[in-house]
Each structure stands twice: as C-alpha cells, then as structure tokens.
Image (cartoon, rainbow, N blue to C red; front, side, top):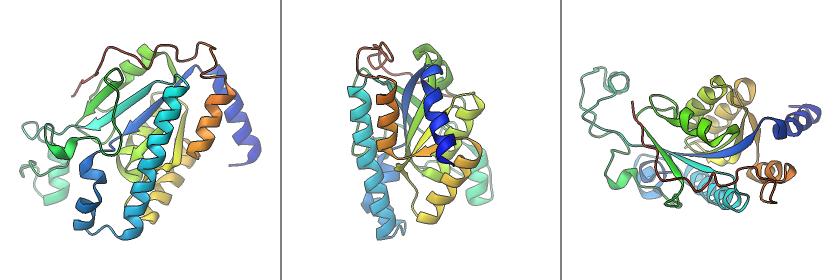
Length: 239
C-alpha cells in the first residue's frame, strides 16, 4: 500500500461514521501456552500469540479510554448442534462426534484468556469461523451506528480472516491490527495479512489504529461512540 493511499484511507474514515473494535476468539483453547505447546506450537508461535494478546489488551484499554465500543466475538460451540462440514473435514465423516471441538460453551476452554469484557460490553457468541455467520453481529453493529471496524484477535488465518472477509461483504471498511493478531506460525500469519490487505482490509499496527481514533477526535468530547461502550449486556445470538 502506498503512503498516498494509506493517507487517503485514513482521512476518509471520519466521514464513514463511528468505529468499533472487534476482539475475536482470545480464548483459552486458542491461547493457553500449555495447551498450544501440547499441540506442537513452537516457541516462536507461543511468543507471537502472547504478544498479540498483550497488544490486544492494550488496544482494548485505548478503545475504552477513547469511547470506542468494544464488541467481543467468541466461539461457544454446542456439540448438540454439530458443525457437520467441519467434522467431515477433520475426520472424513460429517457424522463424527464434535464434543472435542475447541471452546465448547460452558467449559474452561471457552473462557477469555489474558483479557475480558466489562459487564456492560457487548458479546456475540458464534458457532462458525466468522463472527457474522448465523449471529446478530451485523445487527449489533448497526444499532451502535458503526461506520468502520478495527479488528484484533485469534487466529489470523482462520476466524480473523473469516470475520474480516464477511465484514467487508457487509460493506464495513476494516482495519486489521497486524501486531494484535496472531497465528501459530509466522507463515500463516503473514499469508493471511497479505490476503486481507489485498481483498478486504487495511492492515496497520495497533499504535496506528489508536492514531486513527485520535485523528478523528475520539475521546475528546466529539460525540463519536458516545455511550456505545456501555450497552445493556451480552448479545448472544447463534445460528
């Protein structure tokens, strides 16, 4: 991306409406280093995940300070409603049991890891990769008056990519935080970022995203995002 295009994109965001920050799947089953190591994730991968979680937490703090609404998108898998396509891909049979899928709702594996929503912040529970698939996320964003999105979380090549792709197809300009997202290998992470940069998102650092918020006066009494971080609780709409 040229500096000129980057500047044009940044300058135009003020006219698109209020931003929101999506935090995607920073949950124990995707983030606990002991669990990831047992899967074979190497030290570099573990560091990348830990660093992305730390930067996501800092960006969440910055969003709260700037009155940017934080929307928490989390996997809450229900084995009684099996995802047959994924079961088929994993095992060769769409009728395979799915109770060992990650982030089964109500289990420790589904809990947030290293950061957590405030009781007043909105949460959207999903059963597929994309935060938009079969959920009320689009309606939540519409109710907030969202004009564009910043996106963080795990993992870059899976649920982040799927959600960002759908966000673009819902006509939201999207900015992805390159250093507040992670995959388990650098190759997967960089490939997914390149994919999004080509097709669906502007890719910047978390610090640059904070700069975008500051550039349009967020947190300075302009009215952007006013009250949107203090909704009535969780939005938990599944397919």
